[in-house]
Image (tube, rainbow, N blue to C red; front, side, top):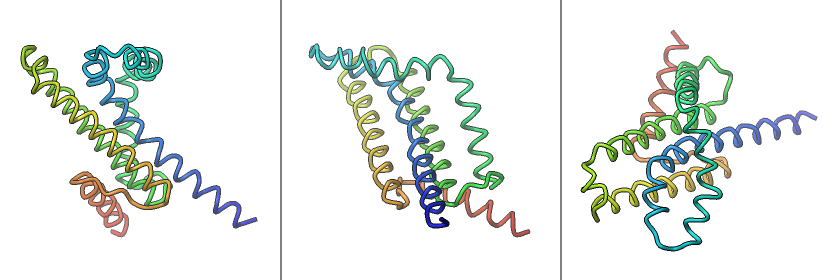
Length: 173
């Protein structure tokens, strides 16, 4: 029976660790999705965006402040080790929140570009680069977590590791 309990804990740990990567994905979709999907002349892509992706982002946009407060609370609880999460889950939660902050910064920076620059080839390339990079990093992270491994995102993983280490060091004092 203990083996079944351990397996359920591992499954829950991985599901939660994968679920938190929804936040950076949807954040990037809210900022860059309309720019990418609505600028194409392909009707099927536009319809896919209107039917699926817009629905996914509407709840997030309507409750953005509440979700942001929840993520900051979750980050603080995981960084201080107050929640009884495993080290693996805490690392992935912290990493996803930090990744979400990076996506938010990129999106806000893009909105401050002059309109002529946003609509230029440079603006489209920037939007596509950030959006596709986010999708690839989230996909990579989901695959790694599903196999029980730590995803390594440049700079973000190091910052998450430092937060975990800091909480371990402070709990030993």
